[in-house]
Image (tube, rainbow, N blue to C red; front, top):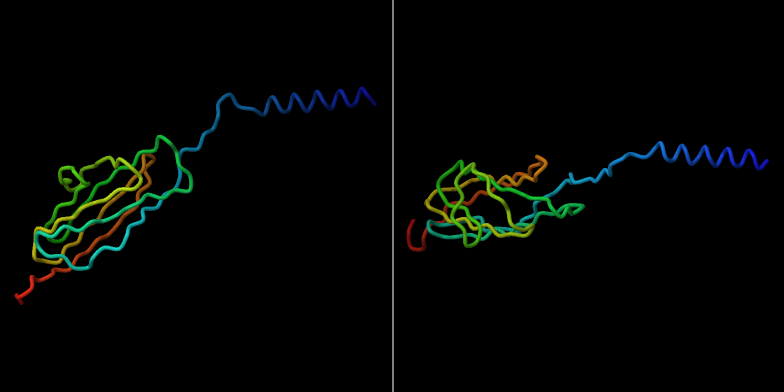
Length: 141
């Protein structure tokens, strides 16, 4: 009986050792979502609107980086992060934190629409659509 117990124990140890791999498999590819606070529906020329954003992920990987690019397809305006130069359309910019604020300034009296794309380092992207109606200055029609 002792002989069989020793054989089974040695067999289990050998099976356990052969099932192991030499390297750790660390998952760094997590799905994410970008949440925004509500923004005004109307904007007038020269007005700046703050867009509060937060990147939410099930898991947080310490070294994950996120980037932003935008494309304005209707009218004219500027988009930027606080204290930075305005973004150029379709250029890629690093987002410094998971919680950030974008500032959109209208340069037109027309309805304005643009898309913001947020991407992680693994190629996953989230698209945000923004549309502002033209707000007429008080006293004009």
